[in-house]
Length: 265
Ligand code: PEP
Image (cartoon, rainbow, N blue to C red; front, side, top):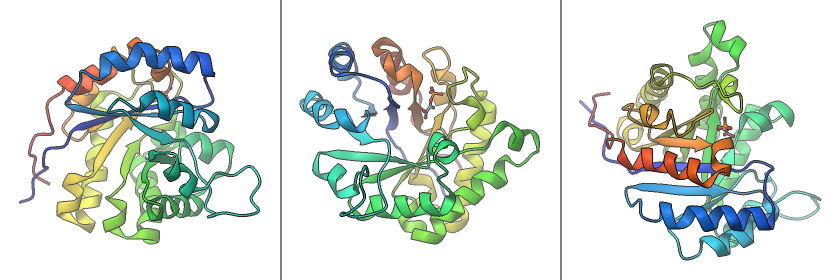
């Protein structure tokens, strides 16, 4: 019988298309002294592209990692407006979001493109944060597990299980993103469990080590109950990451949540 090993929880702030030089510096000035005291949680910030280097400088003396929100599948050359994985790696990014539901819905990113971005990120030494999740109609139609499995399978087909589990997976129900509506801890845990069992069907030991984050209107008020769930290894935070004290409170909830209990798969 396989068991989950200990993992530090991971909390990633996705600033989306928000911020300015002044606002970013002010946010980080308030945030960093607080979260740098939280040693049992790993944290990362994903600012918009133009601010990556200045945020990298501001994060320099901290343990907070830098992430990007998107990348090109192309390596270099005539792709005006695109940003390559090697550029992100070059300026110090550790993570990159892949398959965020806003990109799937608003920029027509399908499973095949998401899988390509995932593979491109990994090849450049970045850690992809693969976002998966169902719409409200799909949930109401009882399709949640099938949708999530299909999104994961597309990446599995492209890179194989050993590379898939090198990533971070973020379960983000589309109906909960930016809506103020959060999945209940039980709803989130059920899908996280499904993902972990699906990973275990491919490779049991790898499944236990893969971090699966929850995202969707996580706030200071609901973070602790979510992070207390045995298969929730942290959070991907949108709106609440723009407020230093809210994000710090969410990181604190992760810091004080129990480490993943060894549980049977
Ligand atoms: C997100 O952008 O990934 C997200 C989860 O946003 P929010 O926390 O605002 O729902």
